[in-house]
Image (cartoon, rainbow, N blue to C red; front, side, top):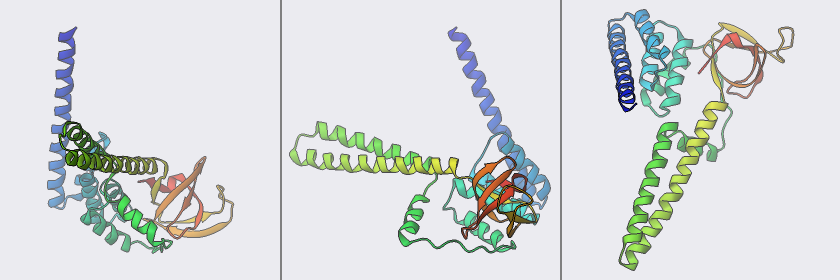
Length: 252
């Protein structure tokens, strides 16, 4: 029994290693094809990696760049947004996303935010979900270290100092955990998408015969509010709301 488990572990390790080697090889080939200007083939190889459930901000960023070089702005924006979701403060991602957005037809002004909400969003977007979780774990480990020093401390000053530090870092750890949880919850419940129809009229209800509200164009980012059958209710950056066919968008 133990021997079988050991062999299974070795096989799983070998499969993981093989998968990693395969992806590294494909990534190297795709990057070389991109450098040589063979963008179509580079895109195919990047997408083969993604089909194996591999994701990273750099992979999505590279794919966005390849689509941009092919002048496919909607696809470029989609993958820049995917990269930004993982690494929200990367300067290269944000810069290229801004360049791509400046070239699409729609220039939709966002609803102004109050200053406190803007500050919170800047703090909230400092790290990705995983990094916030790691921060929470790191702070909690420090809390345990300070607790141990407090328990082993022999002087009143040491005990008082590390008790205070322990309480402070425990509170910071809890706060970081809740930021991580909120970001994870928001990512999984608040869907965003990019429009892939050249031009589309947003409707007042999930019906082709309903009232026309406004027109948006390919590459625009929309926020998903609801879905009824093959229709989705969307909101754009200026707060306008309406309905579109699901087939006209791709989820970020």
